[in-house]
View: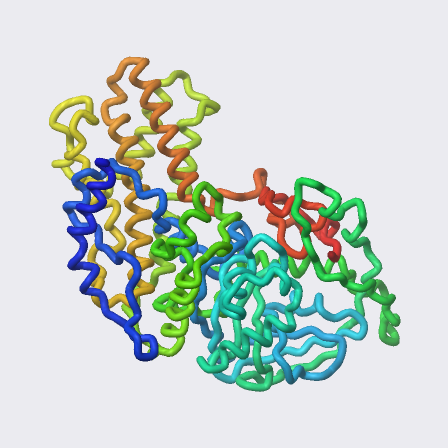
Length: 548
């Protein structure tokens, strides 16, 4: 009851901030701002120890924003929930591989790097390079949104294209691109951006806004190497795994042979597969795929916490299993209406705040330090005794909090946890350091969600760190039992915080990969024989890359 009364009190405190937000219209209807775009007011820190509402999605939106257009986090969180207006700027080179020398006159796919397009031709093998002659207008679907597999990676596209989830259209890519292009045409969209093991463009008209630079007859490839499509590797034979449909690629015919006067081997098809995966890894981390420019003033998300039909569906599940299955008709219509509004309103509005840089600043500040603090508090950490371990952990906690502690932020009596009101200003400064001076009235409703996501994610980071600080404030002069209790309590807080944050930067190959290797997460369509829900990273080389 205390928790409930506290949050009712906060809502009352924050009401004026919420009503100050601008409104947007969708057709002849006022678009309801269905989320709380609160600033964290000083009064809201009176009971700062209280944990976040378990149904809040602020940290999920934060993770989404911080990982946009980066392959690593979008492979880990395969089921994307976000749609973002995007542009590909004038002068960008894109690629298209095919088996003939014709420029497509129907919707088709483009790659950002040659290595990706080279996979789609064999013998004959033509690769077209094109350059944008104007900014292309698109919508970006986050997650592994080009992974044609069950489990949710195509959910957002299904809702946009057909208004419902369509498992029966899982592999019907031609119908999908045509339907999406038909949907986007009234909004002036040129296409959509998606990701599998690399990013791609679903382009609606390759002759509009693009100029052919080269159309080359490339070297044929030796595609006679091994394939993972063997019966013993088929996941259908493993009762633990769901059926994993993959496109049925016919065997590649043997190459017709090298061109006259060629010497030596032809390009190896399996090595080309590895090179395409490697090219995707260039965009694993921030800044990600920079040839796509996102407009976060229009980020539309199915993580909107007021989409009540999805709250229960997410409860207790990790991000890999977040689905849009069970979304109500009302909630679907609200999201699609919001997306339409974003795509039709005047461009260039919003605050100008660089939200991706803000989320990056937060993760850069805390990711390595939290990881190190977890190590210091680990039972496996080697110290002479508990007192030495606690002293080292105290240094690390203070390092993270010292920018927010003034000479007045000291408990009047010990233990420090006897009366925690003295720590409230520390939590407040820490939680609002990135956003306290951003005027909410200049934000779009979509930015206001991001604003709330940043503040509330920081609030939980700061709340947990200050709770650890309470335990370690006087630990250097404490007896052995108190020291051991502080270590145990601190270990629990840090472990729970890192689990709640679930930042992809903590998932890596350990030890690191050697020369000629890359750190790899299981990605479609190279999953056959793998557990599609086992995201354990591993080092691979060209010897491991075989065509699906």
